[in-house]
Length: 253
Length: 293
Image (cartoon, rainbow over all chains, first blue to last red; front, side):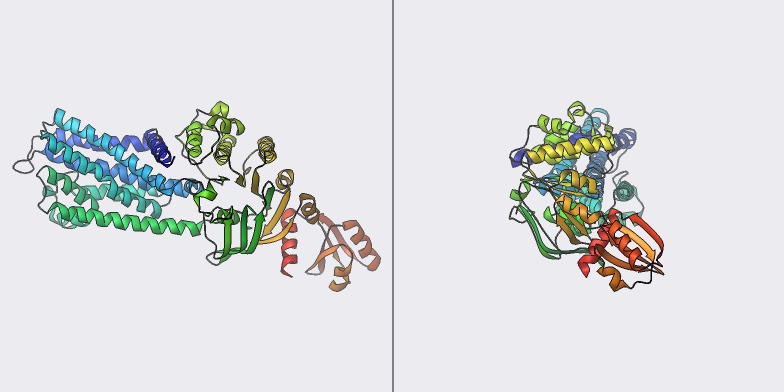
């Protein structure tokens, strides 16, 4: 019976967002559109000796897409449902609280799969990207797993932001951080001060992990990026737990 | 007792929402928590549901911690929710909530009771205000609860919808379910409950059958200028309270005619006489003042 709750919660979370054009369209279309613009149009240019622009950007726009789905799905979703009292009502039911959060994670992962598959299709079809099957698979896994740390960061934002300010806050963090982390255009061509701050930004580490899979990373070992992402995950969950407790004492009546 | 608050205090910052409140709910009864806005009604409900913790005192639900899943499986809850996910259909919302409970109603039955059968496939965002309120009602009853919490269930409903809603609540009560209802309408408490608990400023100020509570709130206010002193006024039969307001004095009473007659007899020079109905709010204030003496 518990498994059924988790499954239904996830199913309806996905349907809910899929039917919400303000979420579904930008989340899926932006990474795909940007990739078409920069990755396919300038695809033949070389970022490194062995990596074309089309190849490089498939990893970074993949990360960009996964991060967007996770930050918006969790951040805006939780902020709105919390602010409107919907989450309070659900907390009063016998629903296992983890079902709610797991459903959001499953939804972010599913949207990530859609975005990554679309990018892979475009890269292979129009960008001349060729990888061995094992590389495609590893890249796919690394990108989709990115839903976990960014889901946690999104959850923290969902507990920090109000229902009205959440979309603006998430955009304000998401777009500049993605750019400064080298997800839009390769970090190699960014000005030095941006290169210097990039390692402090969560998206940089997912981008570098994905680039590492295709042999185009900046050189730091994969475990350092995994460690950084684990750290951001822990911070995100900590803030979210603090917010969950705070909600218990705030509600007035 | 199927749900109980014992000597519960709850603060939000410096504001005391509940001040040593005790309240026990008996099985099979409809209890109304009646009080003005900010009286602490919703806080009492949230404590019984385990949504917030008391600063002191205890809350139990079916003899357990209110956060215990076993307790929650026997309760249904209608809270004031500003919005519900708009893009899911009515049937989908009810289907999901049914899955939380071990012995839920069939989805169609919950939809029928809530009067939503004809809009079951509509998205929540496309419903009228009254229909939205009924979706929240359907979510509260779909788990076949033994105890139903209805927090201000008819706020924003027109008169006709309100009466239709009362019908459904009466039917559920007749089926043996226990109900805790909060409202700031005496009329609603009177129409539905077999026990009314009046709270104000976080304390119980009256507790009884509807006719008992109504008698308390049937007070009238007599205002006049008189040379009689407070002690003499307070001693008159039927006078509940005496309050000075500048040169005038205000008396609250449930028997305005007798008190007026007695006043005129005792003070022939009495002037500025006014008699008016004391509203529910004022009746609450009197009850509260009485409780603190």
